Image (tube, rainbow, N blue to C red; front, side, top):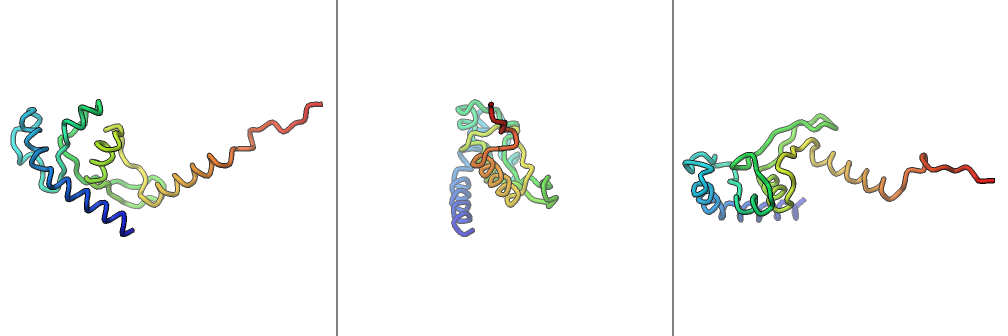
Length: 130
């Protein structure tokens, strides 16, 4: 939807503006030897955010990751910007990988929400004490 794309574009502009600072920090900490190690289409990690969160990001940059949805079988990708937000802003585990496409993820979230609202009555003991 349009609002989601706008937020994504704003986040991308901010990341692009921050790219030189991130690369400089990676160089200073010895995590890379040359700025050319970060591909032009990748987002360098922010070592400060990673260490403050107690995370050990296993790579020095985020790049688009292709995967196949386990629910519907469609190919999809996890954008570098989404990864950066997921790991640095949401503070998620750096070892998580996507397994569902956006549509299937939304369906799964809706299913879980519905399940929480209506408890499973099959496990309830409906016998009356006599």
